[in-house]
Length: 283
Ligand code: AMP
Image 1 (cartoon, rainbow, N blue to C red):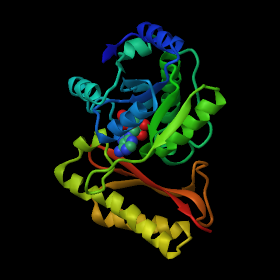
Image 2: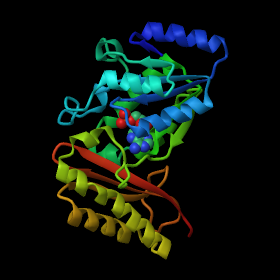
Image 3: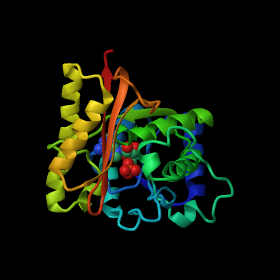
């Protein structure tokens, strides 16, 4: 596995691989790798000749009061894991390399950001779109792999790829969970022990919501109330949002039918966790 930290070197290498007609699978991450990331890498490995993993904690996608400085980092562990899982190139740029000066062009994501994390984290998806535009132009992948844990991100990236004609196939990958159901996240290490126990309620509330839908409930408010009450009674976390929307449009629905998302975000003392179920509902 090669570790590359410079953009120019990365582009030279990628051009060489492309001239040899190699397919390139790209997994962009912020590091502190877990089973969720490794599943994306595994898929990329299955589908492509070359696998590129990037590790970059992107300052542009964090708000001023968010956890940029406490976001967990462990490059040497990540490097061994990546090598073990068959990554060919690990792109690990510094913030100075990625943003030597403020960009003269700003990308503003206009659609699907007035809800969920876009609403709670103003500017977050603009930062995501900016870094991905750069990374897509640096890596020039055939396919890019994104986890459905960040379902709104998948929807936004779909828009970015299609609006700006990136010749890239987006591959969404199912959420990977701990044995007790908690969605794997680099941020889970920043939960206090009692919060880690309580956090399983996020998954249990989604299971309970799905069970009600399976029983025939079609009113989105009934589902929102159920999820909200379960999280409020089983955790000390502060609920940021519990929402039910059509997916991937992220529009309010009067009644549940077609593809819908039940999405939630809960703030614990040091971390904010997100989770969702995307469900096909018969009318
Ligand atoms: P991050 O390092 O948190 O920016 O995540 C990098 C990629 O891994 C994103 O596409 C995430 O959606 C994906 N990812 C993170 N956690 C999970 C998970 N538990 N299951 C599946 N994909 C995940």
